[in-house]
Length: 374
Ligand code: SF4
Image (cartoon, rainbow, N blue to C red; front, side, top):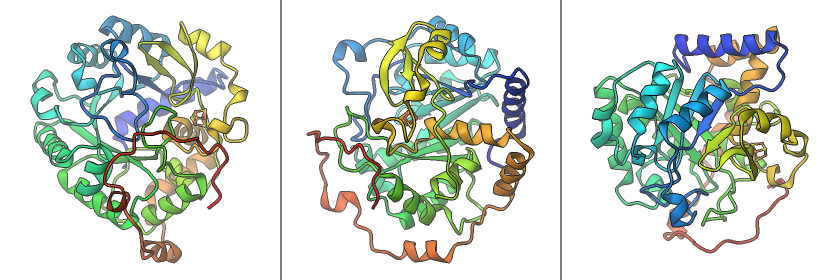
């Protein structure tokens, strides 16, 4: 089961209500960024390159609640920055639990063990721990030796104390599919409820611009990883989105599906691009030129297959027709996805990034804006 029944029911009834109201553009997950400060400096991150005065700022709990109430989405993801470094994170979580919102607190877990006492286990609160792969790969990806062990300890402690815990994994070019599959075994053994996956997005501000995946390479990588699936692996996300990543279906982006609110306001148009800010959620929805975005409409979107743009498309598709419901039920119940060609892909030699690039490259090069064919 990808998510617990009570959560799936809350999301399903919310989406059906939007459909009954005839609302074509509705938010599914609010990406609430209460700060950009972090205790890591990951090579693929576009957030922590802000100047010091921006990194010092935080949204207050009241500002967070106002944004959550304006938006109305049933699920709140709290990325950042590192939310556990927010000076009032426990008040934010408490206020959201009181509003019966399903919260994914996205953390690198370096502080998780130390801060767990601030929170109470609840069906509404999930720690979504950033883990990018097995030890060598994760430590390279977050540019921190020992990061994997610290995060794994945090996960185990949180599971032991009765919290819901998932992982979120961003995959970049050079990811070894066999190692990623072994990593899934490791995470399930740590006791996580489920895993979330996404390819990375090429942020202009990220220091390492060399290892972002193009669309064709993304499909090939996810086909190798997610075909011939083990029954023990659980994924805490839309099964149709996973099929999209594997190249089994084509989706268009839903940029309003996961709107972002941060210290700058409501970000236009999505979590990944910054084409200005709106003062209110209503203004964001009414004044953003949505037609300017998406794979075929904008060079900045050409290679994007990121969950914040496409997962909402999968959820909307599920509830748009009986066919959508049937296809989702099939994808949820029959997860094996047998594919002999994908097994062959697992045997192809891979050169892990950290074997030839032990240091993060801080310089930035020109972005490729066309969809990558290879
Ligand atoms: S395709 Fe990606 S970058 Fe473009 S609007 Fe959608 S989510 Fe944002």
